[in-house]
Length: 375
Image 1 (cartoon, rainbow, N blue to C red):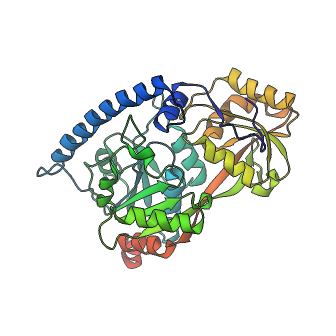
Image 2: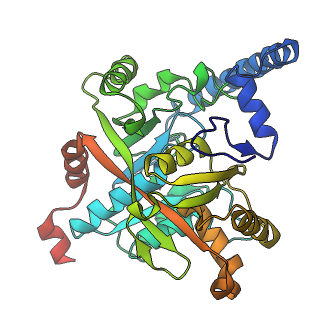
Image 3: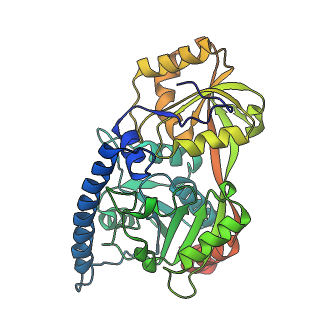
């Protein structure tokens, strides 16, 4: 499906996820869709019951254990992209600026053959000086690392539902595009947990605030506040396009896209937000194709995307940094023979409200400068 700024049709998705999203968002109507929603509601009830039983476990003595270093968790309530990777990178940079030694800890979801997944590869490019460990048992990962290395701050990537490990700061990200996951837990909606779980949060960050008006952000802050403990702050951040990265590593300002005729493709949880970002930058998007989240590309599929871009007379094929780390090895041998530029759009978190609060909380967790100098 070809999509340009004048065509509001949602981007193409190549799997059943598209049909599921259409059902739970009620954009798909009719008797079949209504029956599907009824069935998903029954399954969601079973899911909630399972959550309630699981939550009882964490109240037992010794169920939650503490790591030998401060732990900050970055997570969300909904499935899909809310900006966790940019937030993890931001926290790591804050720790480095304080001359501390951060460690990024992740489950490694979607990794194949023991290799790092795309989030890990992206973080390695953004924060090359920050070590990463991957293990579904986050506590074991931290213990293994600290047995031989120093760590001033462990940063859990996607850790809100990882209840076994105690944390000193629980950060929950809420995306403005789907803040409450269509109002239902999985599979009837996108919620991993009901909104009442926000009572565990120590700090909430609204992301992609650029997609809402100031009044809309204020209303969302009020809605979130109803679920939070007294005094828990709600910060506001935007996803700010920061750079264009070409295959040879050359970097361009994000304004490079303005007025440029491009095609785009991605395999992320929220492709609509990526497309909207390209439109806001002034790119002339003549074709947009979305694959499922964590998609594993084949060389033939990348060739198809490049050929489609050539036929569309595009100047560039643009993707996300998350996808780019998977595309690049498939294009390394033919980089000089491509008929157009293949590029990634980098995105950073830019706080518009409360950044000083977050930085202060991180500084409070780190060892004092004198202690760090003595090591």
